Length: 68
Image (cartoon, rainbow, N blue to C red):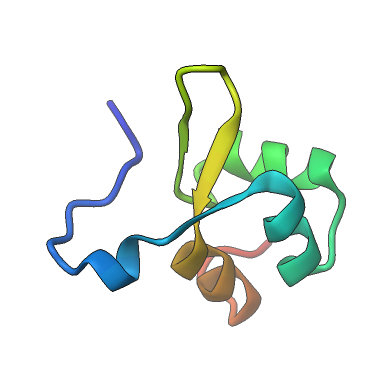
C-alpha cells in the first residue's frame, strides 16, 4: 500500500527533498528516512529512487501529528 495522500488540492501536495524536510524538522536526513519507513511522514519515491516528502506532513510532525 502506498503512503501517498488522496487529496485534490494541489497546494497541499507540495513535495520537498529529504534535506529540506530535515531542515524544517531540525533532524538529520537519516532520521527523516526512518520517519518515512515508520510512516510518520508521507513520502514517495522518484523514478531515480530519491524520496520526496509531502511538505504538510513535515509541519504536522512539528506540531506533534507525526513525531515520537
